[in-house]
Image (cartoon, rainbow, N blue to C red; front, side):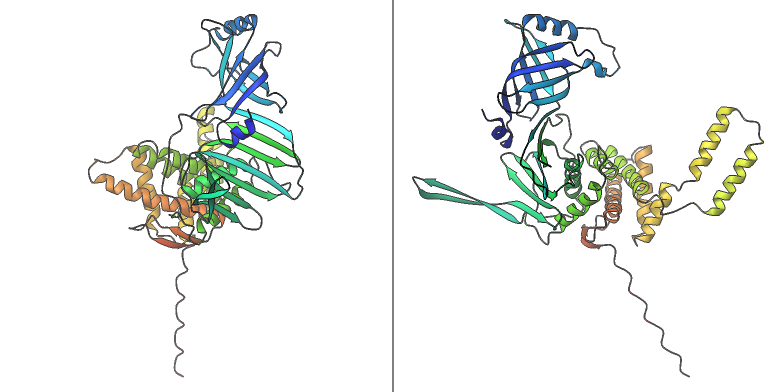
Length: 458
């Protein structure tokens, strides 16, 4: 069985001649034997190993030890997995928790895999690096290319089918190709050689979630750089919600003007400049807002208001500096407190409060951003109203929900405005702060210049 082909079809299965589990806390505790790895219908990776009776009993005794309720499993309790698929390069995985499977014939260890990795040498291409990301499910995106399928029988063409299902985005630096394949969506990136970082696949994921306003689950990542090819199979979270909110620019199946993809590239370029592990701070705020839409309306508006607050502090920390006069007064207050008899606890709390006052409040940053961006001043009030409503509970129901939904749309427009400014996007956007959600230009147009006053008669 060709595991590479199976991976390409999104149905991974590998029969392994040797699989070895090694305990992290005790490297001498090793369990091994032939086995199999596969993806189930949800894409979750699993494995089974046929082990000798003595090793099976040792695993059974180890997993039967009493644990401590309410505490995380210690790192040393986990196992690492090393699997050899005949003559192909080996697969590795970490943080494995195997379980003995009994029955008529004992000797089976079974478990789940969060991430399975295979690394091998490949053709070196100093000019370009490559990333291929497989997402769970077929989701809609604006297309600009199509594919053609031709069926031939005995050398004669019997049937031809055309599908408009591909988007190719090339800005000279990055070349993206997005297509639907089997039951999944595939995104391929070609970028300049030597510029691929471990965070790049995640940045693709983040940029797509921003552009389409929805949660996406990764099932596999393939990277090729400097003559090294790495394949990572990932179990999508089975308890992850289907969060979805209005995208920054509503789109159709056909790519009209390429604005969605230009917005996507602008976001990707901005977050990909940060090579730190984990999601970019902007993406974390956006991700929380998107994820919350799968819960209740109360959770959604709270997460949206908090995301706007967090984005303002993340993107524009210096937009509204505290005045020199106020800082001088804080210095005088601290000096006066030095002569007051206070407990250490009280003094620390007062000093901490004064320290926070030396920094601009997020509401001050939002106010300055709205003013500088020529956005309607009422958006700050909308954010404040939504923030306070979500913090202290909803309204009285009935028509009150209409007001909440209106505030939510206005604050969503404010959220996207902050991100547009951070990534330097210019072009059309959907303005959710206005009835009917019209398409509007970003940045906000400058007000027309006043005509010069006529010269006075001599």
